[in-house]
Length: 177
Image (cartoon, rainbow, N blue to C red; front, top):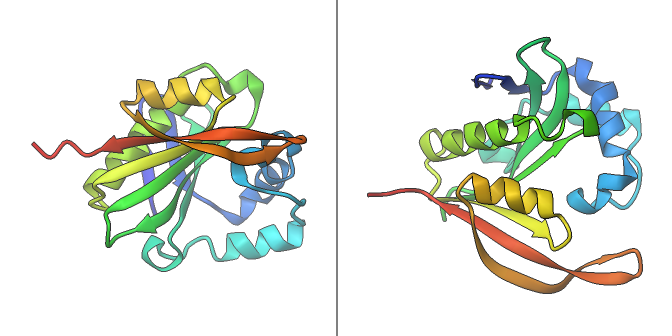
C-alpha cells in the first residue's frame, strides 16, 4: 500500500470508506470536463472500482491517491497517474482539490511534487505530463510552478458547452544529468 507524506499532506491509497467522497467528486458536473466524464457514476459502480483499486499500476496503467491534510486527516482531493507507459517511461498526471475552500493553500503543489518524485524514483519514469484546457489558468500556474513546461497545443481538442477549446500539453522531463 502506497503512502506518500509531505509537510502538510499525505497521499494514500483509496479505501472503501472513501466511497461517499469519491461519489461527490465523480458526480460534480463542474469538473467533468477535466476527467472526460459525460454521465454520472452510481455508488454501485464506484464501490466496484474501490474494491479493485488495490491493483498494480503495471496491470491497470493507473494509480489514484487520496490527498489528505496532515492536520486532521481530511480527504480534500484526488491525484492520478494515468496512461502509465513503462516501455516509453512516461505517465500522465491529473489532480483535483474538491472544495474551493481547500484550494490556494499549497496542497495541490505539494501533492504534485510528491507524486512526481514517486514517478521518477520508484516508477523510473523519464517524463510526467499533464493535459490542461486553455481556460484552466490555475492548473497552468500549478504545473508551471512545479517545473512543467508547455510542450504543445492540441487545437479544438475539447468540445464543451457548445464550443471547442484548445488543450495544452505540459511536460516535466526527469533531470538525467
